[in-house]
Image (cartoon, rainbow over all chains, first blue to last red; front, top):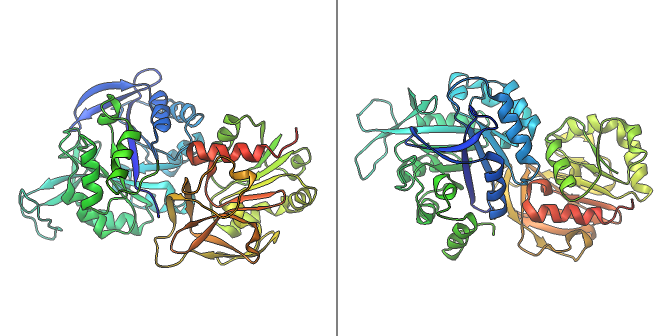
Length: 270
Length: 199
């Protein structure tokens, strides 16, 4: 049986020499967390199942910096490495694969050019193509949407792009199904309402999408403590949980979190 | 020197980094003649069987004769599958060094298998020194190997059916998972493979 995965996410600001890991709150305020490859290696040794690097640099050409970060990381980190942020084309994807990444994650580029998902999956395999969805709850009724019941009322979920700065009008549930059809291997599903809040994952969002696609869903946004990860594995079909802040600032170690999950009957790799 | 054959399929950097981490001298090779001085040969790779066989054709003779000469060989992922006679994935023949075929994973599970799965160790073998029953390795594949002779099967994993995970016949070692992506246990397996190499 496949193990549920615990994935630390490193948001990288590559606008400074060498790059640094930061963490935003609700996609805005920024706090410094460390040097990308050093943090990645620490998480690897702590038992992470995969590492995600997201380039959140606002502007400027930073591809060379990301290539350097991936190369340095892959020398000492021997688990799958996923890289995203600013990947616009199959050429951009090739650049990160050739630096040592195993998977790319795309969001804005997938929405603007859905064919890119097919291209990456055909060339590098579905396992190499992760589609990221940043979803926000919309309580205003709207025709033709997939409506989900929540304790706060019925809502639908809207996809956003450009790191949460622009809304697209696209229904996240329908979009997840399309990503699956086009060959995505994982869906990295982030709740914009929960990201950085420490309030726990958006269970209704994660449940809705993980029950409607057959590919693995990585729950993201809002993890504040290990019980949130337990909850998302117990209440939804998510195959993986992604967290940043709880690991970055030393509140919890990955190995301890996995031990906690295993004691409570979750199948994890220890 | 360990020759890692680069035939344009997949992430060659990971396997090189992992081998160097455990102390190997690695050469990435693309030409058959570069195999002449190899103390060990590794075929990594993800992708389709037919495409791989097409790309490996120029090297086939050198590889099979090196294996006959007793040079330690490690096939990883697609590199285990191409040792077989044939695959349901493509009409091309495999190397046929191991009798049997490669078939698609069953319909009752998600294909590809993608993630960390546990080893069921069937036999003690040097390649698994320090690796325990239930240790996790990272798998990414849609097809799996069915050897005629089960004697060479060292370990399996459960994914809809019993899936061959590790094969060892004399100097031939082959794994369905990716040791270079399987954390410290994966590195240990590569280190065990290197123990066979005379340098």
